[in-house]
Length: 151
Image (cartoon, rainbow, N blue to C red; front, side):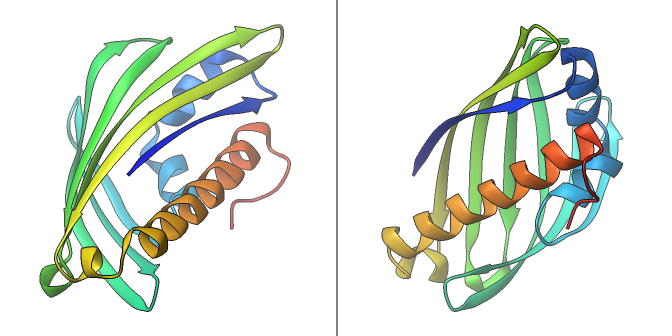
């Protein structure tokens, strides 16, 4: 499944870049994130529990940052194992563009799933993925701009 989108954030690019690299901010913004910790300058470990259709799945995985061009862009790749439920892996190219005092965050992401999750069907999985992405960006924009506490 592929997703592309843009988010306009009322904050300078350097602030948005710092937040994208702050595990404390990201942990608050990622739906169901239970832990997120740096294990190297470009690698994090994560534990996330999410609902995908009728399944509640706990993923343990690793997140890697590559193609880093601070504070302009990077590629974020993740792979999570959900036990009997299956696996999910994906990558997103993230680009930040200054627009006055605001930042336009553009992402181009692709994912791959397997196991019971894949048996749910592309419509259910795609709908869940879009909902989780919308929730992440709403939380992230709120965290960066200070408009409200992330949910």
